[in-house]
Image 1 (cartoon, rainbow, N blue to C red):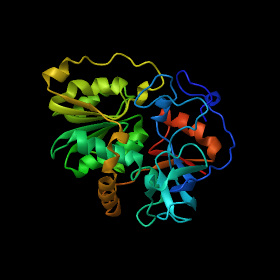
Image 2: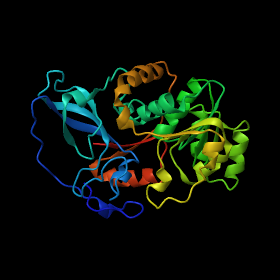
Image 3: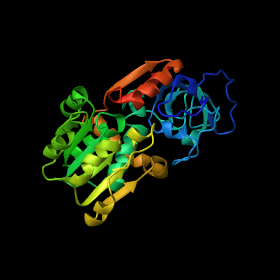
Length: 325
């Protein structure tokens, strides 16, 4: 649970672990026992006292996250005990109750439980909606994806490749960049920690940038900005480098006018109607081996959620950060 509001990077004292009775079920509700939690950077925004895309999380409330698990009680005839399901709002807890209609059936024949929190979960759907709805990449265009080794960026870049684009990732460190190119199939990846980062990014995008899938903000955004081409599209998905600190001044807005740029911020919860389409298309890509679900870093036990969350915010792992219960 949220015990206090952090200033900067969250610390252990901002959280507390409590025991509570299992919730009772209303008609149409289902009780889920969580097997895995899928941690996401956006939860950091809910910890602040200032509202973002959602109201601040009240002190004493369960930290939000997606979860996958098994039905242990059901008042909904569509769900039987033992069925595997995904809850968008499972939270950092071992059990949760939900209206049956809000759950997604996790097909074990298509993918493992954890993939339903990554490429087939909120992370993958965020990449899908961002590109399909706002990035609109066309064959032959150059797409830059920040946080390219992360759960969202890894799917966004692979999708852009499937759509015929040249894809350049940005990630922190040689290991992450090698993973992005060698395992995920990006055309190039630039290390934002390199002293000559801006020059290397320009070399990787000699024709400029048509689409920028933004997950980071800060110095990465500032380096991409001058490379944007006329009628370029900027998909503002996240700003993880700015979640823990006051944001620094970014680039001026004049290029938006001069280059006729399209800048669109989006929140996945506004587009949940796209879920059936997403699951159908992404499921087919995964089944055919055209999308690599990506690596995972798994922490063990509910008590490890804080360590996993803080490490994720600092870019400590490749791929999706999970907690096994």
